[in-house]
Length: 264
Image (cartoon, rainbow, N blue to C red; front, side, top):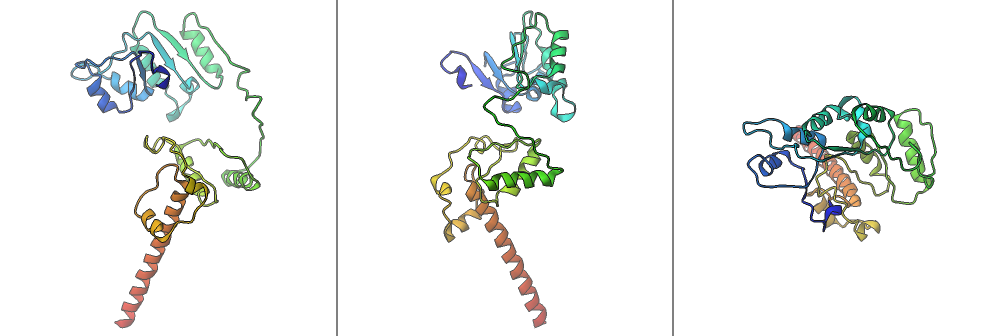
């Protein structure tokens, strides 16, 4: 979106389907030159309603698809069916399709040769190869526990932040976060369950970098509120204090139960 600033292009992002139906429906006067969204959200806007589809792609001149290698993935990770619906909705007489991918998939190339006309392919660097500036190591871990042990071993030997870790699903991201927050490192997660505010990349405050120990009042306040993104040490302290408080409450309840039984 920032790339379109100052160019006179009316660019919009579809983040909420319900609001988009009202804002860009058949009766709306809102117009746009560039639409940015995900395939699934766009498919919902193409579905028929009493007033017709909320959105029409009949005048689309360019269809740009990023992460096109996922087009042919099986299961929930792929979006082949959604993209097919979008492709069919672009009924203009002159539509240019552009498919981008960081990895080269032979299946995508074969599909393009079969379904697209006057295809041109542009490759930057060697196919499916890492940058020459990236040093790669392959390590056998055996199982999931071995992966975590190997990662902790790397972190223990010392590293230069920032570090970016990729996992397969958001559930795995949450699990890894819960494993690493107690290893005396600053760690956070980015996944689809985070709000836009939480994923905005707030600057890490200096007090967190100095690893300042929280006061009693800070601990009490942290137990009453959820930490913001970026305040990673605060998130660690929040969970530690919450667990300690729960343990104290259970011990107090157990003690009161014993005293009441002895009194009886």
